[in-house]
Amino acid sequence: MSKSEQPRTISELEPLTRDWLTAIGENPGREGLERTPQRVAKAWAYMTEGYGQTLAGVVGEGIFAAEGSEMVIVKDIEFYSMCEHHMLPFYGRAHIAYIPNGKILGLSKFARIVDLYSRRLQVQERITTQVADAVQDLLAPKGVAVLMEGVHLCMAMRGVQKQNSSTTTSAMRGLFRSDARTRAEFMSAVQGTLRGR
Image 1 (cartoon, rainbow, N blue to C red):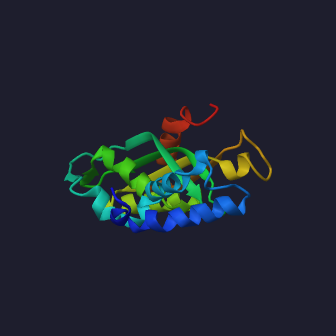
Image 2: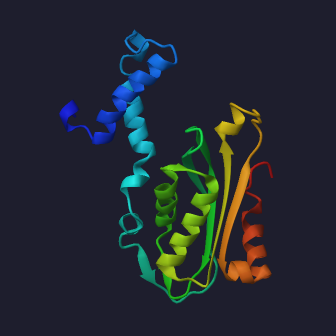
Image 3: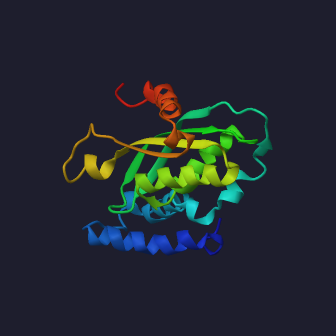
């Protein structure tokens, strides 16, 4: 793709990356860095593509009528995001459960929903809530549960430098919030997948 055909994000980020390299004391013209502004721009365009997507767009025709009402759990959905406070990566796994109420969602759509909200400047707490609200809005199920566990490089490689720390967030809707047994069933199902267990 020629420079004139590149997305606006890439064309705008390239000169900013050159300025950033200069500001930290590097020479953006040296051999190892000559193409770095282009690479960084392309990487950021990908890592923040969630801004250009919508929930309806990523779900498409993935909602189906169904008679079942037993709990559905999709575990170990990898996610990668960028901390909005330091613009450093955080990553981990998401676990999503819902109890159908006449509608189900194609399983791959859960990963797409997680990516939709993760590929933005974010905080883990917000992603967790956004994913739960999205499933609730799409399916109007009897309940939704989302549990996310993440490792934050802003905590591991700077500041307190705690490389083995992780953050767990959860959002419960419907029966997962009101019924302790339903919540316990979900937590028991994902317990073995949590980091360090």
